[in-house]
Image 1 (cartoon, rainbow, N blue to C red):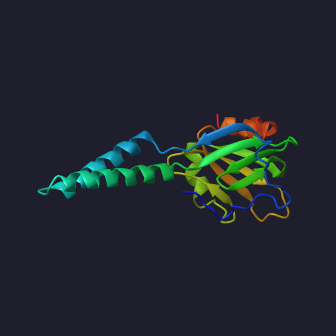
Image 2: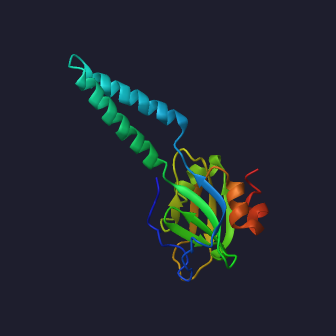
Image 3: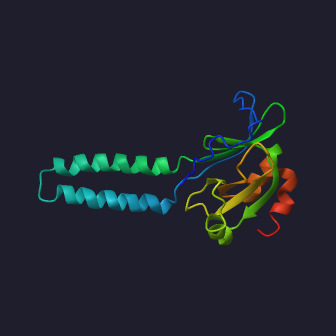
Length: 183
């Protein structure tokens, strides 16, 4: 689930990226797990059989096509989150999570959140003003603590399949300190 409360929660002194001059340093699309596709195929087959039971063959083919299209659309839309790190012409690194972007120069600290600590980070310890991009099937996260007096967002929590690679691309100077408890 993507929380869009902070779509423009990046630093207010930051400028939008110019796509023509940005260089992609890291990119990850968060696809649903393969077994969700199997579960959706089972649901489509079960519903198709229910529609077609004791009816003409059209009651089998039409629901099969329609339900397959709807099922594929649902799974692809759930997999639409892209996490990207880009470097602009000025050398500023940007984290892009969906429609939100964050410059690296406003990140004071970073932390890799292992799968075992995700529940705590997303539970009672979560600050309601934080910007969160998380899915249940992405088990690890990075926490990026902001130091921007003009932005009320205290930190970003971003789900990622490879926290070390994301931190290395976005805030390379903080990787060693951020990965201490992770390893």
